[in-house]
Length: 637
Ligand code: HEM
Image: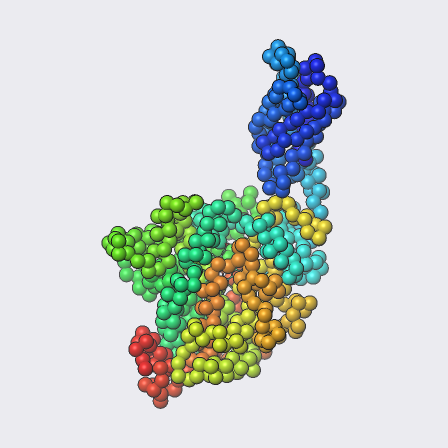
């Protein structure tokens, strides 16, 4: 509703009861002119949450001439449903319009009118602010403090704190994160509402300093606001980067890197008498695969021609992950942002310069090959594909160089840590549950046999290993609150209002451990996904299990992520016999988490890995050959 009041000066032949048509930018309305020229006009914009800006407004008395007046200022904020507008309009006499125009008011009258208008405008804004605070029936939640809101209630593991608070306030809970309203959903029904039923209303992302400074001003998919650029980006990712043909064409890269990891592990296990630290191996295999698939080579190993040494490259990657995962004060209390009290923004700006130098080098190298090869050029990696796309003149939104760089960072960021963290949790659970480990190993021996390693095409025949992965993702989702979304309009659910501009967090970690949803939720039981439970999948359709999210913003790398997790885990189990270090009992193994861009174990996992390939069969089996000479694996017989 837009309340319009002010003086509408009528010509002498016009009765005050005459209906007057008022046309705003958005839609025509009819309003009855009540006494003293005060009237109310419905300007509901159909939930599109558009601000009505200052501009022309037409007023017409039926059958007579149309007159125009000017709206004095932007009048509707995106979060308010109503506003008050002072209109100074003159309706000209129908038959003699020019002559009937009233003389211009004197300077004193004008001055008084302006003061009065300003006072009324201010008073109405103040009234509306009060009303706006009361107007929304927000979901229940803890009382917020000024400035920090409820930040004090969120401990170092916010998904745990949110679960405990939701137990008191309900599965739809309001929070205030610094200056911003937020809601936390922690039931499958609520997750379905936000991610499916009203997905489009919640498809935006909040702006963050990392998105601005590191991701080329929100040019990556991850941080990009909802709009034509993001929609086009999603389509291109699905159609060009992650289509089944391209993923299949890069299978050899994944196979080679997994074999190389197994070979390194074997060497590390031989060198370390007691136990190996798995995390670094898992991180490196994922980084190497993604580097080769995206950039064409492993810059961390082969730094030739690169502006950075492998050590500097590794520092840059670590810094990208760290700074994307921090809670930067300016992101939640923007008016404190300029102080940068934690120094994160300064670090981001420094990192951004380094990242840009590196990516410029990568793009130049790729463009140089394209130029050299001319007509015969064939895209070998994802940067080649992105550069070809950037040249396409038919794109709805042009892809500039910075956009290509933003996408590259998404590919590296999304594809490395997520899979590594998941496999480390899977191995931890298996070491704590030796019976489950034994069943998985038995399946591998039965289906694959001792003669070879596991290939991607074997995965459909390994349902128990697949169930181990699902069970790991239920208990240890890498993004326990998904990635925050932002509501684009006011939405109501269950009698509560969720105003536009609210951050939405879906606590999939709490859903995964909810006894109302899962039987014996704290037990690691892959069997729940076999047989009757086999129908529950991680692909965004089952709202009790959403490790990749769901809906329009769902993870676009799910296909690659699942391939990597399955392949790495299955081969680790197939090539080595695993146990906890001597003196560490299963029930003593720490399962504490630490919160960041992903949620890995707080203490890196250490375990004893005994190669299942004994010295004696050195030249006898392709499995052993593969483990010893990763580079020659394809030539082993
Ligand atoms: C085990 C592996 C992975 C897991 C568990 C995972 C999980 C997720 C989750 C939970 C989201 C947020 C979804 C939402 O907001 O609803 C997400 C988004 C995203 N993921 Fe993944 N991911 C994985 C692998 C990958 C890979 C391999 C890539 C790319 C190489 C990738 C790229 C992305 C991108 C770009 C987004 C943002 C999408 C958007 O906002 O439109 N992820 N991922």
